[in-house]
Length: 120
Image (tube, rainbow, N blue to C red; front, side, top):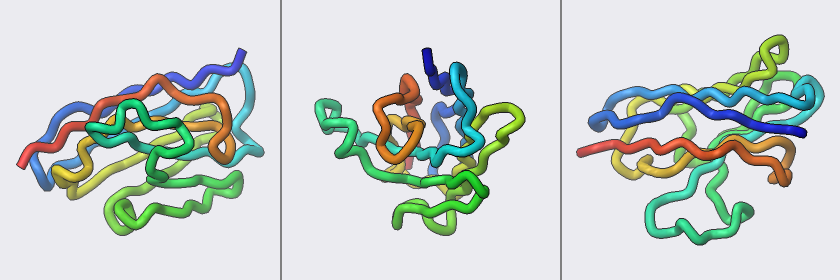
């Protein structure tokens, strides 16, 4: 059974930094694209496919970022640890959301979600 277990997140004031991790079990991430997505407050009933893409990380290590993340967030992966990371810097209140990791291009397997709260 494939599982994605997230950790990290929390609450910071604007301008602060947080990091997220996503450990994958039951499969190897070596050849898969992985992604970070977020769901903002008030959209808790949104379908997973409607979550905002934060970053996509490809098997070679390169990444594509959503407009809101460019220049502030850095996604990375460690195939040896089967782990995905998201470093978030210069956070703003608009970044407040539940963040999810995902296996594949909007694949069916998601992490449990991690709350990130940024105060003004």
